[in-house]
Amino acid sequence: MSLDGKIARPDGSFDWLMPYPPQDFGIDAFHAEIDAVVMGRDTYEIEHGMEEWPHDKPVFVVSSRPLEAAPPLVEARSAGLPAVADELERRSYRTIGVEGGGQLIRGLIAIGRLDVLEMAIIPLVLGDGIPLFPPGTPELPLRMVKCEPKDGGALHVVYKKAE
Image 1 (cartoon, one colour):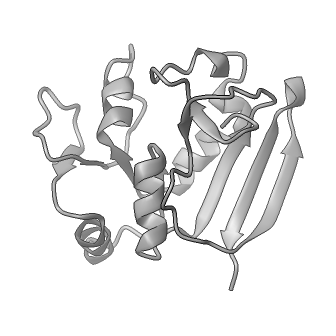
Image 2 (cartoon, helix red, strand yellow):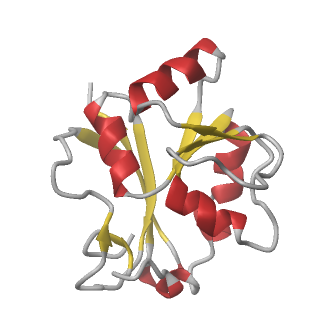
Image 3 (cartoon, one colour):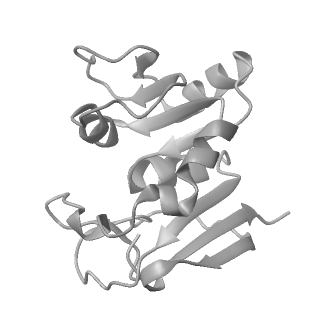
């Protein structure tokens, strides 16, 4: 996210992230540790449009619309987040990676299902854009477990839910 908490420009573009490849922030290790991924529809559409589908784990897309030509291991879920979280737990997925925008993050915080927040903080103030934490996001006390400086002045930070 940008220094002022934005994940995209107002039009949804994220060109400003290109100088900061996700591999520099441990995305490969992150993907190796998770059992499945939950993402919002907009994130799915962006990733589905990439040259190569970036996931080799089950992916659950929270969307009310069906997915056309979905990659292998990708399923849509139109039920609310509590039902999706319960289903993943019943299916023995223990470590779930979340990729998506503020609405998904806000919903997971609201149901008490966000335990770790890992992100890159990019040294750029966008001023306007799509926030990681939209209005109405519930309070979530966190404790920092990692803060690592990266090239270009970025930070890789990891927070865990405070006990």
